[in-house]
Amino acid sequence: MADLSVVIPIYNEEGNIPLLHERWTRTLEEMKVGYEFIFINDGSRDRSVELLRELAQKDSHVKYIDFSRNFGHQIAVSAGLDHSRGEAVVIMDADLQDPPELLAEMYRKYKEGFEVVYARRRSRHGESWFKKITARAFYRLLSSLSSVDIPLDTGDFRIIDHKVVEALRKMPEKSKFLRGQISWIGFRQTFLEYDRQERHAGETNYPFRKMLALALDGITGFSDVPLRFVTYFGLIATGFAFLGALYVLYSRFVLRDFVEGWASLMITVLFIGGVQMIAIGIIGEYLSRIHANVRNRPLYIIRDSNCSS
Image (tube, rainbow, N blue to C red):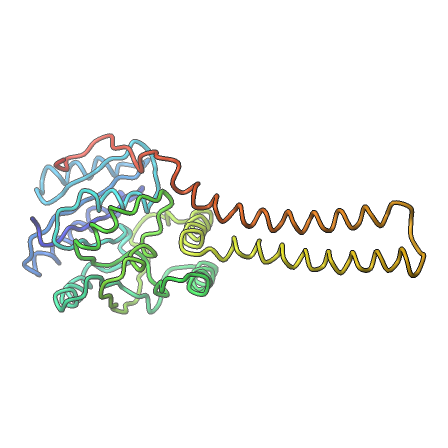
């Protein structure tokens, strides 16, 4: 068993793979630890998988998993965790915005007894003001909504103990938000701050659409507040319906200012509308839990791999 498994999802990263492998190899050799790389090709359309196969032929530390199609970043990381054999696992992206050289200090923290050591971004270079603002807003919104203490301004770059990996393998939900799951699992956790660099090559694989999808996975996976909001809104609507009903009755019997049939129609519409909102909220509470468990499709499908079964 290796000391460290390094899990790296790959999506159209042919311009980063050679330097990524070089820097990681140098870092791990200097640390004098046993290691393995697990690259997960998540349906890349460039030469990424060919480069991974070439690396695997030259370097016995390199393992790769080639998906049948694009399943998404979080699923790719989950596949790497499923096939990891290290005492601890490092998760990072392939764009070299997170420096491999930081691992040595993170590993020292891990050896002090922390089961999770994550990297917290002190600054974010090479990113648009829009992405910085939306990312900052998302982390703080999620923190305020979630009952789980999810660290602010962190990505997936971290080192986790094999006990955490085993716990993650037992969490079958399909809409993965790994940084939230790791926080939910618990154990001793700490962090190191760093300055995030610009992407080395290529374009970001997380446009606004994917960022929004990840945000929704995080919020719906670790907070019931949106569903409860519907219920609360239903209660408020019912309250206004009650007040409206009183006004309708007042107009009908005191002011004598009414249109024939208007009173009964308004009372019925207002009351039923409020009740429906409450019912939708209650049903939603149950459906959100049922829907997450009834589908039993595999998380991913592997086309090719040199990982041992």
